[in-house]
Image 1 (cartoon, rainbow, N blue to C red):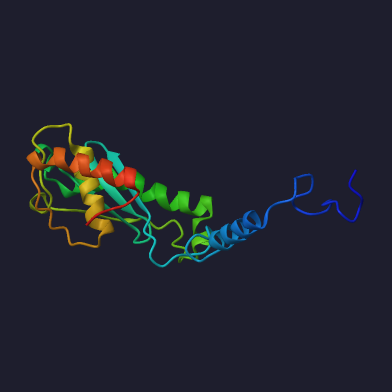
Image 2 (cartoon, rainbow, N blue to C red; image 1 turned 180 degrees about the vertical axis):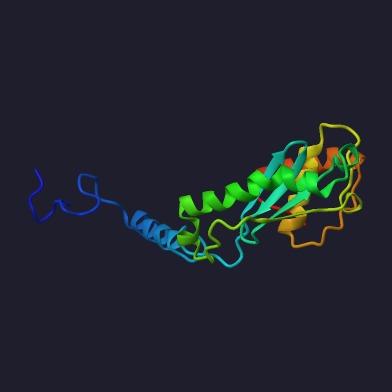
Length: 184
């Protein structure tokens, strides 16, 4: 029976067997890492980009939360009316919904970003010549991922790929996801 001097009662590890020095060192290192500026979840990061892919109607959008904008990457532009008012009407619910979500979720408090209130997000659409068009209707997700990759890499929207390259992109996306990386 352990006496008071050898028991670990009152410590955070009360009731657990004593640890080896290596375990204690690993726990301390992990604790430091979790509190570091790179991983601390409540500290605003300068290089973090919150990107939300979204399908509205038959168009795909990228919502860039920190930039307060919605960009429509539409690989089906050739199939839909070339009417800017139609596109604005399509994304209007998103332009109004995301500010409300940001306010209600405490996003501004946690991220230390400027509170934009309930002001609508701006929306822009790339012209059909700025974004490749798909031939078949089943590759819009791959076109969207390629658009997001350009945004993440900070590249100008110079999308110089075509439909027949999509199967290769799908394989690359799968490799990137499983490797937890993103290659340029």
